[in-house]
Image: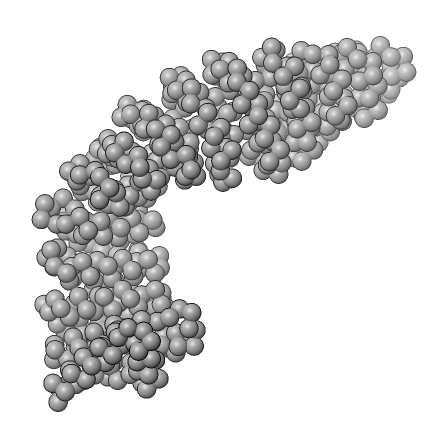
Length: 561
């Protein structure tokens, strides 16, 4: 009878939930004796009987405690779940009893437990997403069934991008109804947190279709108390805003909804939570990619918030990296932002030494190159020895990273215009680092141009530098830049200037340059760039210097000079 069947499965539930080792033994026996198959058959046979269905769902939930380290039993259990089409039976039972909240809660708990082990592309899984989404819309948010439904939906969406898109593509009205709970006084914090976690997950791949939910998330942040109890909620909320901000089309939507104020407030209130700070800084970094948004970020206290984040979470590579990324973009806006950033360079230097994250290293290098373009910031940068320490370290630690080499050379190119620090640059060993970069990236026009300009600046300001450039094979690579990249005008302007700076006061360097093929290279540049005044002027000065040696006159003439 149905009553006996109900009691039988209640007994299986009790046995399966006994403390180990009894519970483990019971679950294994049930699996080996076709217990799952019997449960699925019972669901179909007693589909209309809510009490039996509830008992079976409880038993299935209890049996579904799998030991991931027990491969044999786990494989067998999952095979039985799939072969018996257990998921299909469970979903059908939920649809058959749509108003029975105990059945819905038990079914959701079961799906949540099974979801990490289900095949992500199983058709029933995507059907479950739609079922739970519609159920969540119709349920009272204060019920356990609602909470269980959200948990199951989150688990399924975490299973695959297809499931995330399936949920994201539901009707806007459904999402609005779910998000309405976020601003309801009747909803508890745990439920709101689960909703935010769900949209944080889904927006990671479908942010472009969910921009309209931003206002409710932002409004909820305004009225929730900002304390340790709500830190998980604010992490999920800021994480969702971060994902929405990945799509530039959402940027003005977020700004108009008040995102900047709430993100800045979150940074101030949750300075103890690396997770909240990381999500908040990433949101600002994503928003700062739109140039039209940057001034708004600054006017809402974004710069000071980002600086305070770096101070509050020095051991978090994520916070340091995302805050630095945002500040790097904001430095394009005004001198004031660059000045504030320069005043806090020690934070970037500390991050450089503390974290090996390559993205963070690239950002630090890019920040130095950007600030060094500004004359005021450059003066402040070169006044501290840590600038040179970090710049040398970036060159040495990342010799094969083109981006870091390129931006570090840009920094060196800018600071080398300050004649007062030429001895410092020589003593710190920058010349061999420049030559190494030229050697590592012979065909990169930016690296060759910046390197030649650095050599030109140093060689023209200091005769000792010209000698050292020669001893470090600098002339060799200047000539190679001429030969390999003859069509690139900026690089050739730089290479001609560098060669002239190296040879004009040194007979030794003149002879080395000729031995390396400088005469042919220079004349070739004249032929390739016949109308470039800078190249022509430097080429003439080079040939004039070389022609002072009688033995080179014929060589210049024969080469077409």
